[in-house]
Amino acid sequence: MDLFQKCDGFTRARDLQQMGIYPYFIPLRGSEGTEVEIDGRRLIMIGSNNYLGLTHHPKVIEAARQAVAQFGTSCSGSRFLNGTLELHEELERRLARFMGKESALCFSTGFQTNIGTISSICGKDDVVLCDRENHASIIDGCRLSFADVRKWRHNDMADLEAQLQRAIAQNKGILIVVDGLYSMMGDLADLPSIARLARSYGARLMVDEAHSMGVLGKTGRGAAEHFGIDHEADLVMGTFSKSFASLGGFIAGPERVIHFMRHHARSMIFSASITPASAAAALASLDIIETQPEMRRRVLQIAHRVRTGLSQQGFSVGGTPDSPIVPVIIGNQERMLRLWRTLFECGLFTNAVTQPAVPIGQDLIRTSFIATHTDEQIAKVLERFQTAAQIAGIHKKPATAKTQTADN
Image (cartoon, rainbow, N blue to C red; front, side, top):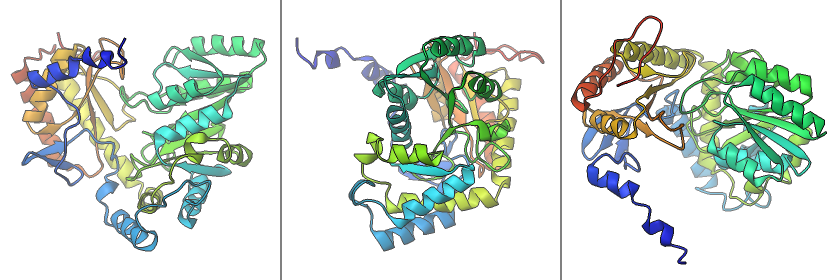
């Protein structure tokens, strides 16, 4: 059997391309944050994770420029050997202080952070309890560990407790790992209940705050702070590719645990370190996050306006009011893709999401918002959604006060 035979059988993407509804790998010619240029057209960007709009902030851009001038474009090596800059250590100290933890360790991407953290700290005598809707990087980190990995039903506390009882009976070390804010459906983990169960059963808790950091919580620490239990999360993961307007990730926690990871996390030890520009941009973004809380209030206000407006139009809107992510659930893959294409033609850049990123039958248009979106842009978003639904033939039932309805 030819190893490449499976590639010949993969035709779905080419079929969608021929149908004109393939929504991925779209090259941007230019970007201003809230608007992008594609093939000479300007579209309102509502598919970015640039939640605070800092990718084009003058302070962030200037910090990156200065870092390139001082250190060049790359460290050309791993943190472990020759790629550690004073800039990296300053960033780690600042992040640890910001998160209220003893220490922090930076990785080159958020994906590598979860892989390195979980696979280094969890071994053959341990159990990882993983929410079924956790990010792919968490799933892969679990796979690369030698631990006994057990998935529990999404946000189902009874199922989690049953798994904890089983792990306790086997006298294993236990790590519970969850997303604080789930990136596709835009819902929050039930962190107060999860933290309570972790305490009761002596488990450690790791929270991935990739999509909530900078946006949720009194100081922007994320979902755990939003719920007032940030001191109960043993390990907190964050990324720089969302609110921090950069590239990379970090884990924060007890000093002895971070020290262990420095010497065992293969995705950090065997990868080139974060570029000087990325580290400087993340530091500059952290300055802004710490001093300008009005930006996170603004992005949540915008998302609430859109969530309310789309619900009133009859769309089935998921997520929570405490999120910059507004998923519009269509349910059928082809209808979702046709709506995505129509929205694109109407001047809106959105994300088409299907399995395995969401469960079968939950195909959705993922929209996400930026603190620098203008009121005029948001009005256009709501108008264009209504127009696109009519053109695409997406039939919606009138929304009621008690329910939000999906398309027929």
